[in-house]
Length: 72
Image 1 (cartoon, rainbow, N blue to C red):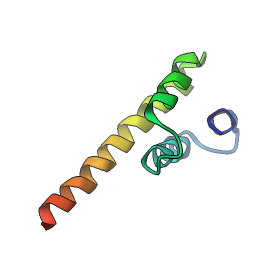
Image 2 (cartoon, rainbow, N blue to C red):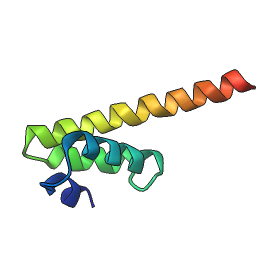
Image 3 (cartoon, rainbow, N blue to C red):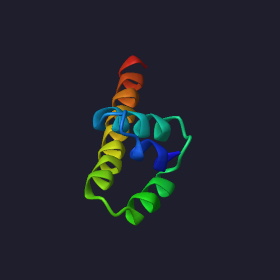
Image 4 (cartoon, rainbow, N blue to C red):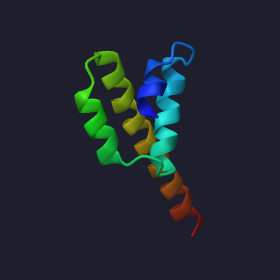
């Protein structure tokens, strides 16, 4: 799943990042799985995409939690 996405020539970098972050949020992949996968990658650009996806997912989760707290 991750390998195919990163190897895609059709999907742009930003879309790859958003897709991976959505998989993290939806728990289709675990953080540990993504980190292990990224560690084994050879291309720095692919590693960066994985790191950006983690950052993107983290920010999105924090925003959702802040909205929940503010609405209580």
